[in-house]
Amino acid sequence: MPRLPAHIQIYSDESLESYLLRLCQANYFDSFYDFALELKHLLWEQESGAAGGLPTELAAINIYHAQQDSGRRSQALFLVEKMLELKPFTLLDITFKHGTSVDLYQRATVSYQNHIIPRHYLRQNSIPICPVCLQGEQPYIRYLWHLEPVKACVEHNCKLVECCPRCNETLNYMESELITHCFCGFDLRKCEQEPADAKSYWQLNPEAFSAFGDCSFSEKLAVLSLLEQLASDKNQEVLLREGIDFFSRLLEERISEQLTLATKPLSKLSFRTLSAGLIDELSKVSNLPQGLISGVIKAILIKALDTPKTSLGCLGDSLLSPRECAFLLQSSVNDIYRLYETGVLSPAIRLPSKQTIQSYQTIFRLQDIAGFTLSCSSFMAVTSSR
Image 1 (cartoon, rainbow, N blue to C red):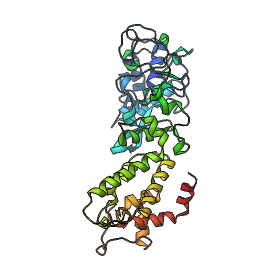
Image 2: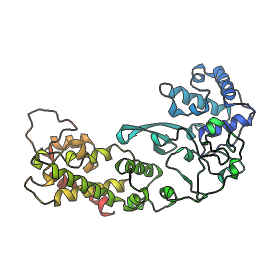
Image 3: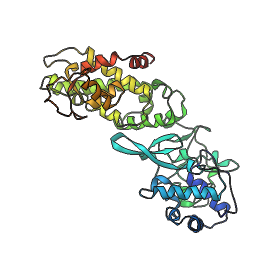
Image 4: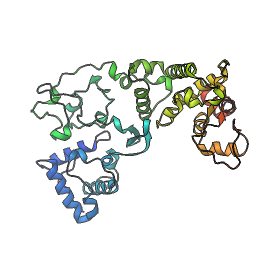
């Protein structure tokens, strides 16, 4: 296996593009394009198929950019690891990979190490920097700076710099192929440090997500993505402080609005209609914290069992689909089918014999599912601890 002359340290929170750019410079190549051509030549000697999976453009190098040839891209990076005498998967560990799930409205996710990230959070046109971080002995680009919600450096409590203070051009090291300097030559390490403001509240305040329990980084991003869709016009800091109360109020507002418009008996209406699809919206977001999900379920159960009866009936009379039942029971649709087939769950409407129930078909009474949910000890253990 051929070797590159110069090897450099790799950092666990570094972006793939940053490391390869520093490696390019350490080996005295004039541009990343020239460096990539050399890598492709070396790879061709080992595995011609893998060589074809390595692009020559720095901004396209990451695995998540590859579609049909993502396997060849991964193989190429694995062979580059061997050239650098790195432990297996060291380089692959700092890539943004394809996620196996989708977030709200079926948008794709990516993964970085153990973090699941909504793909729309990846910055496309600019990559801001922390000037203090770049003052280190080995300046490099953190993967967090690639994420749109990240507006500040937690370590130094300052805003990330998005534009060069001299020429006012947006910063993007993948275009300039410069880590510490702007296109115009300005040393970014000399940028003035501006204290972080409320826009970085979620990232800087360790208590920002306390209302949802102990949240991982992936869960925090999932909550932010959900809040953007449900209340993009409201202050993020306020919504995070409200926590479960926000979702309870949103549920109340949606149901109240739909009830004023209802003309049919509630026993003929789906809960999806009455809640404006709130369960569907929550179900489509991967990695939501369990504290948030349990809080929403609890709010739904209270509404189902405690809503006064009107001339049209009560909210508990509305109908649920197997998918919605699975959400309330925190189980799978197959579990709901099994409970139905064994007679534990009874449909609220008469079904033709041997008819296959579709996952979206609204046939179960909300109050029946609410009562069964409350009879499950696992659910009660979760909600009582919140």
